[in-house]
Image (cartoon, rainbow, N blue to C red; front, top):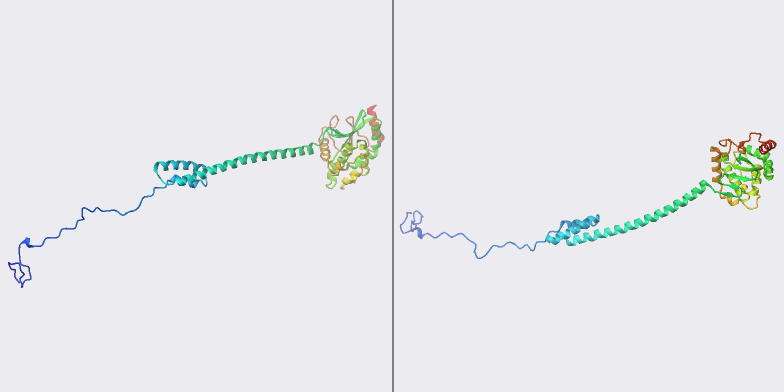
Length: 332
């Protein structure tokens, strides 16, 4: 097929016939968007404001730190008002919790102060009462009751010019021998006005009564008799030694000690109430440690000990005449 001048295709070659360029179809122009339609973005709705950070902090600290909640709450409200941030409700909630916690703390502090003051007053009162009881039990009674001279530490009978001090222990067997031998002599010298007899009943042999503290109980019972029935003081002393228990035993019971009294008034309550136990023990400590006022000896070393106007009697304990001569020799 050959090329033809009329633009047809040669049947032998299969080609288009040549022609003018203007006879060719124009190339299509590229697609362009219509200028009348502007491009659009997808609709996302309104944007929520950011939550204020301090408002969140105020709410959280409202449960654990009231001061921090109040401070951050106020700052958060100020920032929210200025910036338009969200979280006003959180800040207010934090403030409410903070102030409520502060108020509760204040109430608790007031209650604690009043409670502490009340407890302090109560403790002071109890301590005062305890101190008073302890003081009484430690220092013992004071003044004079009957024949008992509590401040001076002895029982006194007679009004004579010669002063005889007799130191004994109710459990001491030698004291029992002394009283049996010399009790009537001393009583007679008291009666006729020759002597003033001062009795010192000690308790150092408590350890020899199997834990019953017989020396203390008997000395206190003698003091009960002297204070309640002073006229029977020497009679009760004689009864104690007439019924003296053996050293190393529990001794007489309180009821038996009460029964020894023949005074007009009962000493039962005084004896069973242990009214003069501490006083008797104090007198013992004072005698054993000294000094002995107005005496030539510094302290008591054993019983019986007799001082005649401060001078120790060293004669036989079983000879009443020797004792009387020693006493009367001082007075003559």
